[in-house]
Amino acid sequence: GAGVSQSPSNKVTEKGKDVELRCDPISGHTALYWYRQRLGQGLEFLIYFQGNSAPDKSGLPSDRFSAERTGESVSTLTIQRTQQEDSAVYLCASSLVDRNYGYTFGSGTRLTVV
Amino acid sequence: QKEVEQNSGPLSVPEGAIASLNCTYSDRGSQSFFWYRQYSGKSPELIMFIYSNGDKEDGRFTAQLNKASQYVSLLIRDSQPSDSATYLCAVIRSSGSARQLTFGSGTQLTVLP
Image: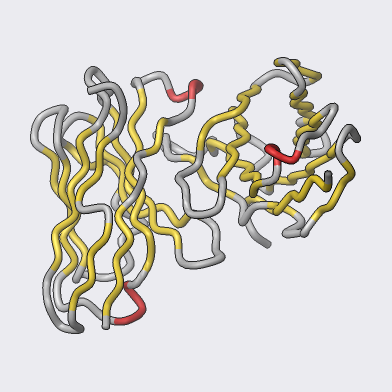
């Protein structure tokens, strides 16, 4: 596609429920990244995919968070048993394998846990 | 010490002035440096990248890198109200195969008409 697409754009869920966030990267971008941005805060790295493998999962905050990617395409970020502190905007980005050119971000999923 | 530090601001400049945004980083081996602009409620968009010491100019924007001082800055000439946004500094660290960008917390810029 022309840009990085994320869905849903907004999600309100009850505490304790599971949620699944989706990211569709730019076609041909082999690298895919998930970040979290809490209100008024900076971007917090969660996980990086190269192809469908995840060389760096160091940013996942707990075992309630998991992510997978199918080939060099769609990725899903799953949060199990959501907590109120999970409320944030979840941003996905993709890039060519050459990291010197930075990323293109999607418009994000705003997650609110009530 | 944070890996990437920015003055959170807010920084206010009058229209037409030069806005100067600063960033320091802790990993001396960092190789690539980026400036993103984020409008309120929107996702970050890439403005500039730089990986050699010195200045890099693109239109009204100039990125400056000083690896010895571990310092990178962004100058915005002839600032416009539409430049009002949060500016995020980001680096790619040197450790291992790390490819992810590490972001600062951003500097909020307001350009006053």
